[in-house]
Image (cartoon, rainbow, N blue to C red; front, top):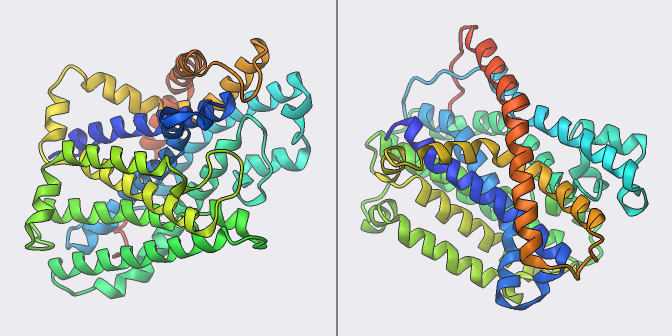
Length: 395
């Protein structure tokens, strides 16, 4: 399975994750999230964030996993940081300018957070730590967690290196999976503690990279499985792993069932009410399992080659390219839609609003990608390909 073909499967997964997040916000704003099974599924589209986190961990931990398994892999801190910044900041800053402009235009609740400190916090993507953000940029708390993960990953890899150094590849893979499991359990514990009533740091902890460590750990664990398979390393002789790696349909079906379970009260209320610790734990676990199932499905052996050779290959790549833009723009589009059409919050037509917001968000995301994000990324890749790379630290 080539790297290029594998990415096509993940591009589709990015698009699904972005649309799920869009779906959840439309369900919440229109009030559909409180109504029936479909509303419950829609509002739980927030699990798209778990998919994004798992995807990031899968992709970015891969060089460290390959190195740990004995491959000679080049990794440059400069290249890593420049490319991450080039992927995140251009589209983000463009959307932020639009958010501020619309907040000034609309005034009222839309501009309630408009002040210089809030704008400065957004410039460094620190809103996830402060909890103060614009009404049409609330989804970007997750970018604070993403950036924290980007910075923490090489450090964690360096700390883990002694645990796997000198061991046989199969032992390395098992130890890495054990570390991922430990990190996931720690993240689940922190997420549970964050939901304890009157917890001083609950709000910040619940949305932090540490609070969502389980989602990142799941992505890294899938990377270990996939890279071990690529290197011919047998992680476990048990036949269930082989079945999992060749059954994308079963994995997608399992993800759908878990999504359905998460739409029930077991994962907390559908509105703005606070979840209990048990509900917060259930939601974190269910969302993470959905992300893991979809990520395993997207990397199934043979699936990527099928997608690459199919007529949908170009569309898959395009959807993956614009998925970040859809994530950035959709809440602003939702806010402007409500303002221009004079829609009532929690009492607006769900299907029509969903269609309109999806179409406009996709259009804006395409323009952002074509005119800004892609040129900046290409320049970043050309610039960082020039220097001689350095080996990645073992992980």
